[in-house]
Length: 370
Length: 105
Image 1: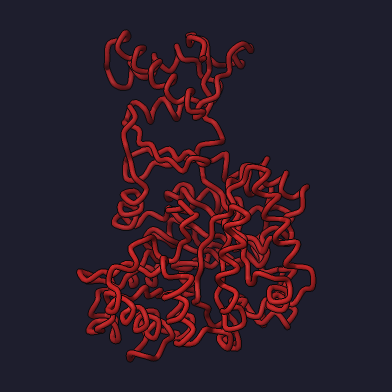
Image 2 (image 1 turned 90 degrees about the horizontal axis):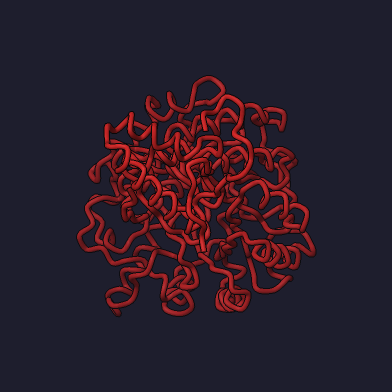
């Protein structure tokens, strides 16, 4: 009655059949930090311009959506924010999702992982916590999140969560201001025995402001990182690549705090409101999602003839956030991703044997899903 | 070592396992181990019936009715399946308590 199954096969089947096995649910935009890169909105403002907290989904609406995404095929569910841990209903949402059979991850800045909270989310059925880390020392991390003491609380919270039996993973965001600390951040994670992933891609904000992009690493730093501390993370060289599509709108889906369905939480393209429609109806009938699913290589003007395609790890969500064009950019070089692909190409050419591990994932991590 | 299963045992899906039916196949994900297991149609039925209320005897009856297999074969297969999943922590066994009202033991 039991057969061998592999995660990559499961993901491939979900992709081919358009089953949303990965759903990221943004349950609130409230946050206790004021990160400079935050993609929600400029955190110097009290809230997302033009919206109010009262417009966020109610607990009853969130619970209804959880039932609907489960029925549509969700297996891996992530709660995010803002700071998801600030939502007073989180424990109930986790319990509901876990009892329904979903693998629940909480994305967190780590600073709210105090013992009582950890005990509650673990008892409710959360299995994992993704913790964002922005530096290997307090000065760097705290300047990034603009809250003194956040670094130590994040480190303490990550250790506590792991001790409580939760799977903890660090998400290392690579920025201009911490680029010289990447090696020490990796060492810190290794000393703590915590797997990590790393990403140099940040995006413009959903509110249309772009100052978050000021902190992106430059070409020289990127080149140095991927020949140095991130060498093992260089993406696969895929010379047979014939598509630049990612999992958006196929096996991946995002839901905003206001109930808007996105192709991915990183691609804030309004695709249907869960206040007006069921998740099933949006997922199956949304013109935006169907348009994405039907895109072919020739629909990506800068990519279709790009000499760097075999080296590129293009994220359509990032490109959409930065250019407003999901299948963009219009021309090569109009997005940071193009520069990254050029750098990867050059490194591959000089040392083609480099790379081959899961893209941008630390060796300490065996994560392949969720 | 696990004790022998009894017909009035009532297996319960463990919260240490996430699961979903995807494109007709039910998969179990062991959360700590990150191990994925696939179930055939009979396994899926047993998994869905394992709500802590339905006894093994009742599960066997349902499998026989649904899949038209001899009762002896069904019982052997169901017991082996439950043993295997209990051994890896995917089932908890509700054993000695009274059968909930309205449930056939």
